[in-house]
View 1 (cartoon, rainbow, N blue to C red):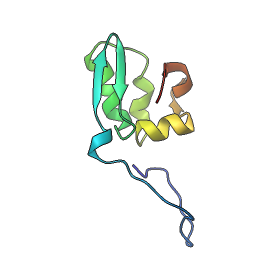
View 2: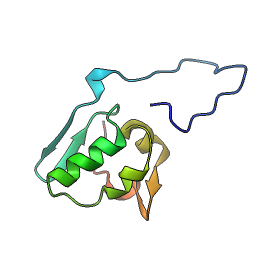
View 3: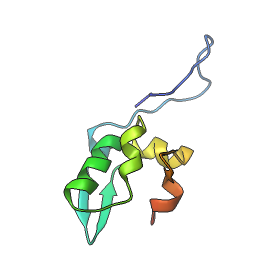
View 4: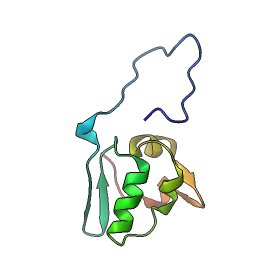
Length: 89
């Protein structure tokens, strides 16, 4: 979502993509969370909580989206993406 992003005065060479509404769905199935890359980290953490799934609490302290968190192996409070991601496509 552009959080924690620094861009120099000259801009960015290349393309910058911000994922829209088609990438923000979050669901819980079979004791797993399925989230689009554009879903906000906090929303994913709250969905996990609402479905009684532990392990994603650290995301409540990470700004941005799941796609960014996955790309950067985001972590906080002793948790990180590498420990909780089962698969990504």
